[in-house]
Amino acid sequence: MTASHILRMLSRMSYLLRLLLPDHPGALGAVATALGAAGIDIVSLSVVEHTPAGAVDDMIVLLPPGGLADRVFTAAQSVPGVTVEALRPFLADGAGIGDDLELVDALTERPSEAAAVLTELVSGVFNADWALLLEHLAPGDVRVREASVGAPNLGSDDLGVPERVRISLPWLPLEKARRIAPSDGEFPARWEAVSMELAAAPVGHDQLVLLVGRPGGPAFRGSEIARLAHLAGIAASLARTNGPRR
Image 1 (tube, one colour):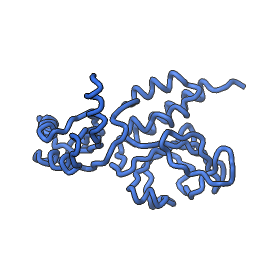
Image 2 (cartoon, one colour):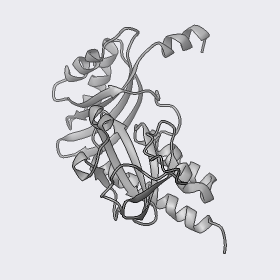
Image 3 (spheres, rainbow, N blue to C red):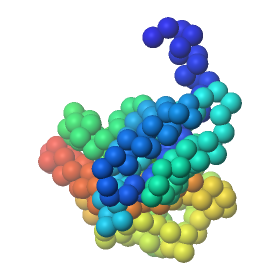
Image 4 (cartoon, rainbow, N blue to C red):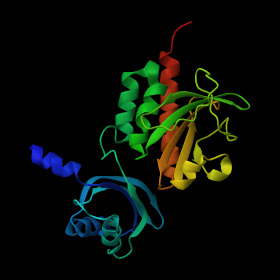
């Protein structure tokens, strides 16, 4: 790859596109053709889940320099039966850990640090922006144990170590993985402004919880919640098996 080609790639804006595709042959190919005709490149594709209405797919797409997001929306929906569920800027360009198996491999390479590795890498699997590992110690006392790159600062100014979370999280402790909605507790104003979508899963027990954030959506679907729970369970199992001996 030449330097000029790299510069051209860097000058292009990437987006996360979530589509509901009709359940008939050729639908995905028709979308790819429509995007290509509009000068839009598909960087990656992942199947989120299958529903009675059709397949839900996530695409990372690259617009040409100066291209507007409306071009993606128009091209995708030009295919009969296709619905765009979400379209948002995506900064990671599909780099790094991109699927469940790659994350499991990373967890098994550092099993004693599995919870930290999970927090560091899980957002890439779900096309999210950040993750936090939270520990509920007592009512009103939740601590930030681990934080990924880009995670919001939820710490208070009480100099607690680990940092005490300053916002109310009444959904903790958490018995099972689920989507977290604004009605579940206190959302910072910025989260509401960027339509933050959240999912959480217990890591080994209900007081240690992984929280994943995806600003601008799309909403976490049931299949994603199940995968998040599975990955959190693997991390917890590895940490227990390979933790310090007493």
